[in-house]
Image (cartoon, rainbow, N blue to C red; front, side, top):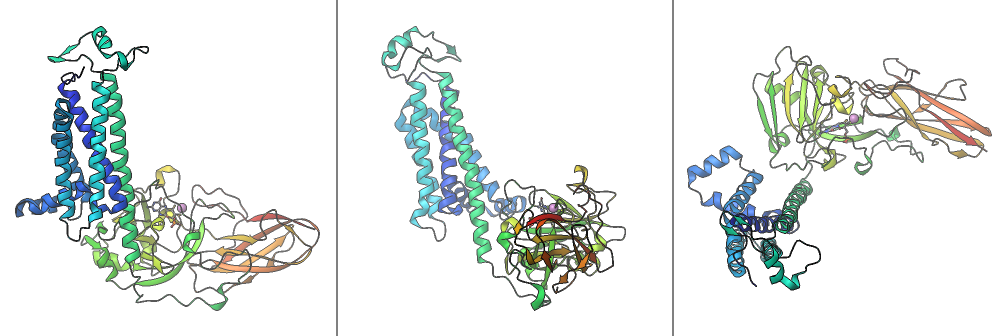
Length: 534
Ligand SMILES: Nc1nc2c(c(=O)[nH]1)N[C@H]1C(S)=C(S)[C@@H](COP(=O)(O)O)O[C@H]1N2
Ligand SMILES: [Mo]
């Protein structure tokens, strides 16, 4: 029995919809690998905008922005799913070949759009072909699932179709004959198809964005600074085994952010909007930013959630435009005391205006250690402000800066139990030996890093087993904004020993012994480790 008229109209439309969705989803996923520009939905959208009369085109560009690919893709998807796909489903129930023909026609339009793009190549057809094939397979599979009249009772099988069909009560719905139509099998099949369609589209989008942004990042040549950093003194790195190097390599640099999926921001689309309590709101493109004088600076970044002795601290050479220079373009109004910056993924950060304007090297940074910012560290643009914990200063993927007041706005972490303002507390850390190490008796080296950004470290002292504090040797530093290496010799006698360190900043303030947890405004206390000497 071939029951071609069994499924009601909504069921046929649903089959077409799911097949169309799978076609688009798989094409989108494949395009992430072949090249995001080979997405048929994007190509059809682009072609439509190109063919549209000038006023329509201008309206679209004005409304959606010249680069909003997502809007184009969503538009095409809506037209296809809302109009074409259900029709294909209706055709397919009549005769599968009609459905295939419909899909093929719709694939052909995609191919035409993809292959008529400037510098299109033959392999660019692949996503459209794969998508169309996946849609056709889905249509065939759903139709078989539905029209195959598989009985719902467990013991009856498809080899006795006519009997099962005869036993089944005929359901009449809106005049449609539902004999042999298994609604549950259609719905579960459709749900599976929808999951594939949606998963493919989302994954394709994420992977495609990543590809575009990686490619843009690799193409970037890091420009020369107008103001180079002070040369790093030869004695900045004591080169002691196990001691943190003066400059932290990008791949070793700690990462802290709220992003589950790292934002992929294309520098060609990036804009920074400066508004709020300013005389003239300013909007900068990436090219605008690169056109401004660039400053290079060595700055140590620290996270407020760093425990005493913790790893959330790193030192890098940053290149960027002084935030103060950009803010002067906008003209700060009196009374403003907060810069509320927002990242592409909606994280916000509140930075005191006076800190940014006091002459320190607070930057909109574009490069880190001689290469374009790594995506994980804020590509294309992030803030770096010496002396403030990252959560109140170091917005990655920054896109918006509102000049405002602390009594009017709140940043992301403030209602979550962290202080609105976060100057970095002076800290010191023992890197060698490691806690719990077993050492040989005799002369050994204790070494580490200390930081008091924008004030500078003037002294580091070490004591063993609560004895006398002894002055450590300090490495040289280019300025007050980086950490400072230190080391001291120790004649280790057999036994278990406790080693402690404390730093004093250039204003003469010594780290407090008082232990405090990271929340709400940074941990305090002396880093203390124990080692075994034999
Ligand atoms: N967009 C965004 N920027 C952010 C954060 C975030 O969660 N989102 N976290 C901040 C915090 S808490 C810190 S300590 C620094 C860490 O920068 P890094 O990951 O480059 O080391 O980024 C800051 N910038
Ligand atoms: Mo942080």
